[in-house]
Image (cartoon, rainbow, N blue to C red; front, side, top):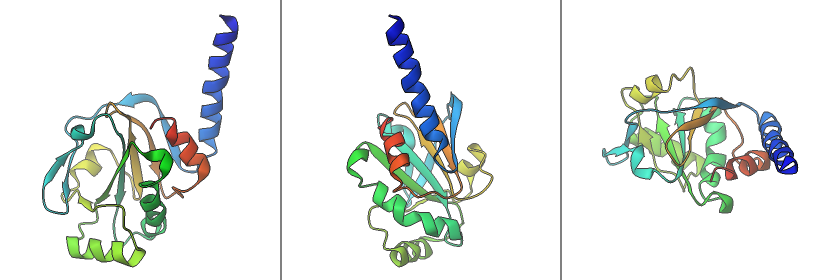
Length: 169
């Protein structure tokens, strides 16, 4: 029994230490619950994130005028199709009040092929999540609870990040 407890401690500590090496990642000490997380898709349809319960969710808040957003978006696009992330659903949410055409031009310019465009036109979600800047990504577990967030840009192709995130997938 003692060995099991020590093993659990060592494994959980190794995940915590590994996560410290990931730039801009903040792991919540307590899970956060949000009521009614909705956004608008590229067809104008209201999407409720609760429809994706059972999936790992990454909400990425961005805008076309944001240089760090532009830098990280291609790696986010590749993360959506990464073989270790088969249960991950990414929702890139434009909070820059850009229209669909401008958003799609942004995607085309960066050769984004695996992500759809979503909107938070009146920045309701940005306020709900208490965003202080963009890009910011919110990570929700399979129960829809926020367990971590990324403040600022990161390389979503970083193997340390992918290995860490795959533990939640």
